[in-house]
Length: 467
Image 1 (cartoon, helix red, strand yellow):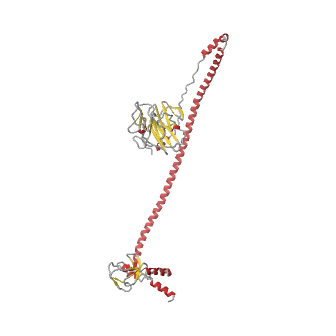
Image 2: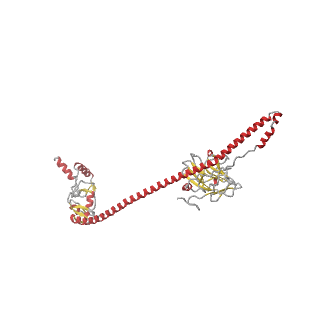
Image 3: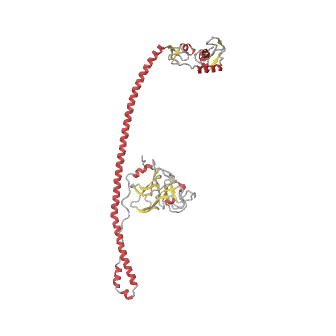
């Protein structure tokens, strides 16, 4: 037999009689014929037998399909030798017959063989033209609906674009407002700065000449006294005749010596450093601070709400834990700061003495050393009519504050104190590189019925919350 005949015979033997395509998962019936498993299962659609062979019509009492693996290998060889040719348009891929009907249930085209199969016996199968006319009407209705949807979509698109443009205009307008207002604020702050500097200069020009005049007058008096002292020391070294000669004049000059005290000049500056609105701005960083009783010196009395502290007259019997300050009359706040900006306020009232600030959490709380930055303390001490800190000499106050605001900017290394009465700056520490955990520190210093009271933070009773 010639090679082309063998090839054609191989192709014929590897083709399923139902789908007219190469076998896929071939199985053999009891009568010895082979079909694709899916094809014969679709052909034998009923659940109960007997089943007729599609080729010889021999009946089988039950399904008894045996896999035919050698035929599957042969079909794969034939598929490689003769790949199936592309199915022309309008031809059934399974049976290579013209597509002449349409299944309304499965919405797919059928050939005559497909239409005769059991799979479509109960389906609504119609001729192509009839099905096309019916579906064309449905498609036209769908097109009408879709066109309406398209019109709505274009309308919504135009509205969305208009909204975007409007939003951009609103943002740009607000951006200009922000730039304008902050530029106006900068100019206002510059003007305020110049006014304060001018007032300081005027105060300096008013007071400094008087102080210098006092100093010059004292220099003159000291020189005159020095000359008289030198003269008298020399006269005391002379013999009796020399000592007594012109003694009346010397005694008169001694009697005429009257030290003129310097003019008393008030040392309180009238000009204070006050940035308009700064304290109100700092209140954005206001948090809720309460006292930690485990750190309180035994002489300190804390309120039940842990917001007030005063120094009592008796020492309480409290555990001597490592966290407790003793003998220093101090107590720490619960808050711990390792980053960020923080602000809190303390009502000091008319107390004559107090100390406020922050300290490192690991400071020594059992010694009476200086509470300085070198030892981990950054505090402001008020003593009657002036305040001081270990980092700066005392500064007298014209109007002692009744409420003190403390602002900590950890990263920037800033710690400052303000009088919330007039918003003026009381004290600011030199820039510091903070490290570790910082905690608020409170000390009433002396006994007094008036406590130090931490004011409520955001949302607390009686406190206005800054947005």
